[in-house]
Each structure stands twice: as C-alpha cells, then as structure tokens.
Length: 247
Image (cartoon, rainbow, N blue to C red; front, side):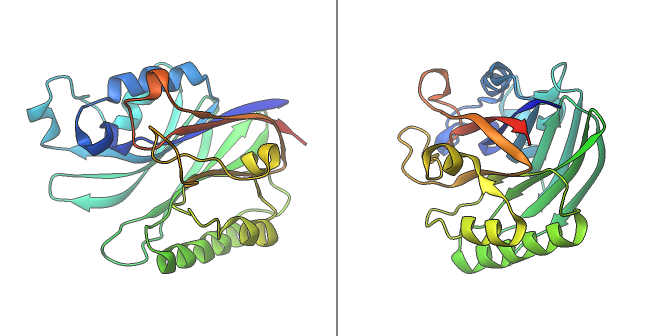
C-alpha cells in the first residue's frame, strides 16, 4: 500500500436539500467520479417502504448496495435509526476486502439514533481500521459520543494500527480535534493541509466545519471539498476527499 484515496459524504438519504428531489442516481455518478478506494457515508437509507410508491426510479436495493454496485466490491452497513417504514445509518464502501465489521450504538438520547460503524479493511495484507461516525446535534451528546469513540478505539484497535475516522461530527465549534489527537494520535487531514478543518455545510455556500477525516499512520498528499457544478443540487453537505500516503 503506497497511496489510498478516501471520501466521506452525508448523503441526506439520497434526497436534495429540503427533500425536494430524489438525487440518489446523480449522487452515485458523482461518487464514482471521485474514484475513491474507500468511501464513508452517513444518512444512508437501508430501507424505506414508502419511497418506491412515490418515486418510480427509487432503487430496489438498499442505498449502500445501489451506490456500490459494480464499482466497490465490498460494503458494510450499520443500521442506527429504525422506524415503522424503514431504517437508515452509516455505510462504508471499499475496493478492498472488508474482513470484519461491528456497529456500536452511540445514541446520547432517544431523540437521535447514532452509531459507529467499524470495518477492518485488508489492503495488501495491512489491516486498516475504518470508522464511520455521525455525531448528534447537541453539544452534550457530542461530548458523550466523543468519549465513547475514544473508549472504542483504545479498547478495540491496536495503537500501532493504521486508522481512519470519517463522518459528520456536527462539530462547528471544533471541540473534538484536540481531544482526538491527544487521546488517539489522529489528525484532521484538512488541518494538516490548510491549518483548519474544511467548511462543508451547507453545501451551496459552506460556512460550518461539520464533516471530518481523521487519520493515523498516514500522510496527506491532497484533500478537497467538492462543491458547485454537478455537486450543487445534491445533499445539504459537501463531500470531502483525501489522497493519503502510508507512513
């Protein structure tokens, strides 16, 4: 393993901002254009019984399978929010074999169902631990989830193992990065490149730094925020990507 391209994206359950349009087909094309080896996705619709009745072109399979089809050979899904007509959660798509996956409930209260999806990816004999997270909207809940994330990594992942943590952290005040670096030795890829996390929300005019990619055991060659053009009318979040190099 010499280099690795990754991306993270909150796909808003395959609908545009304010749920105006079904954009899952356009979203699949944009993700494929990124040509990422591993993709971390949040708000992925695993099942929704009503959408196929309202949208004739709604995928017949779960969204992570639809997005991965014929491009990423391996995928994992963590079901977090469950309701009468379906469920959604996080997903990881990978060009490399996923050898083990766990999904941990990180909900801080009953009004927000959140989870941590942890997949071990075998890249040429190296086990890379990939964690996909979606933290809550409230500061107290995010703090609890940060502590749970730290506890999970310290308890489940060897300290020398390569590690990628990506997702939507809703951390507009940037309270997480210092603690995660101190406790886990991870660094935000955009901070390494630009000196500060990326602006990713709202996607039309990004103002808030909500989405992150943290790495350990990797250097950063390049990272990008994907906005404007064909990305303009998709999710309310911007997609982030990073080209990594193993160190």
